[in-house]
Picture 1 (spheres, rainbow, N blue to C red):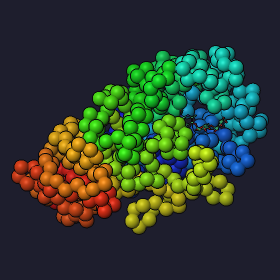
Picture 2 (tube, protein in one colour):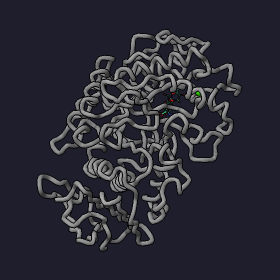
Picture 3 (cartoon, rainbow, N blue to C red):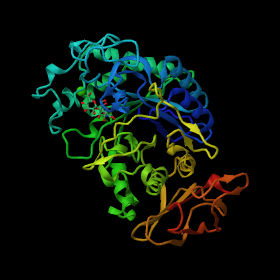
Picture 4 (tube, rainbow, N blue to C red):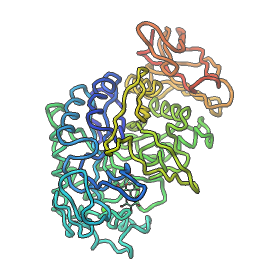
Amino acid sequence: QWDAQVSNGQAIVHLFEWPWSNIASECESFLGPRGYGGVQVSPPNEYVKVYQGDVRRPWWERYQPVSYQISSRSGNDADFRDMVARCNNVGVRIYVDGVINHMSGWWPAGTGSTGTSGFDAGSQSYPGVPFSAYDFNDGNCNTGSGNIENYNDASQVRNCKLVGLNDLNQGSEYVREKIVDFLNYLVDMGVAGFRIDASKHMWPGDMKIIFDRVNNLNTDYFSAGARPFIFQEVIDLGGEAISGQEYVGNGRVTEFRYGKYLGEAFRGYNQLTYLSNFGEGWGMLDRAYSLVFIDNHDNQRGHGAGGANILTFRVSKWYKMANAFMLAWPYGFTRLMSSYYWDQNWVDGQDKNDWIGPPMDASDNIIGPSINADQTCGNGWICEHRWRQIYNMVQFRNVAHGTDMNDWWDNGNNQIAFCRGNRGFIAINNEGYDLKQSLQTCLSEGSYCDVISGNKEGGSCTGKTINVGSDGVAYIEITTMEDDGVLAIHAESKI
Ligand code: LAG
Ligand code: CA
């Protein structure tokens, strides 16, 4: 449950709100060939269609389940199955965002959903499962409003409603059974694991009972006895009643401090020199239990945790630097974010457009990404995972997998460099002046292509070429005029 069950890639990407058919082609044409290990997909099961004043089909409607029928704006059951098979066939795994803490919020009877089940939130009737009022926590919650009011009280965080969402009682045998059936349906289809939404809001012991009952992975794609990968979304920045540590016995846990601290460092509120022991040395979870990322679908738009210093595609130079550091650094299992664009509308420090959903047509169908000649995406999709600096660092991580960090160098401030065994070398310059330095790269003698400024194509390099001497030393230059503040070479970028 801690092993991502990847076949060859050590990083996964969240293709937020992508249609299943687009993900299937992306696995075949890009993710498989580029060494991505897998995809986190948006919730696939039936949910509320939200129309509320100006708010029209927000992304967050997918976090209000109505049943476990596979039917969403990304496609139906057949589309989903086709994607799982096609991705697995090219060695790319699928991880489902499992929303099992709650069902929908309150909506008037007759409100539509993305499937055929229908629901009545007021009487807590979800006939597609079926769930009824007996299956919810209301009786176990003792706050006046029925909502979570105080995050210093673990029992209300787990037994009361999160922002008004009908809270399932995972202590009930019947509820567990329905959740296990849902997870098993997906596992049997070939899914490799789950991001467990809102894990902080469920008791770790109840979750353990549920996960222990999930089947082994499908042997058409995985070895016999392989267990589903579980990564639990627990927002723990310290200072609350519930800690991420309580969940490590069930699977990996999202380490939200990781992206927050890197955001602060690259924005200049902390020096990169301190990153030499980034990870456990900074009080974060043990690397064997952590799932790390620079931003996610919540904190890239001010939801969730991390605050204003989180880096996103909007500050692309820092974003690429932070992702490069993450992918080069031997800590945790890495996840990349892949976004769509929306116009922000800042009012009193809050983006009034933080609800905006993916690009859609006049009938509210998602318009999936198109692929431009230069490999970037069109139709309003950012596709950070297709940026050269990012996909080449995914390859770096794969090439360096299994080695430790060594030969750390820094200038005492914001220029750093290090090796990964004798497999890879990276230098980062976040200083207001150039980096010009002879450094130990730990690589064997020869010429290497810097995979940040270019690609190795055939026998040559479209970016900077770095000459490593017989002593492993190379002259490294990253000027402030360059597009990127990173230089990276590895055993497979030798020319
Ligand atoms: C998560 N992790 O624990 C998701 O990553 C996060 O995106 C989900 O919240 C949350 N838990 C519940 O699954 C998102 C939005 C919320 C949204 C919620 C339900 O961040 O803003 O709440 O999904 O759709 C919305 C409204 C609320 C309203 C609620 C109920 O924003 O004002 O009370 O719906 O109708
Ligand atoms: Ca709960």
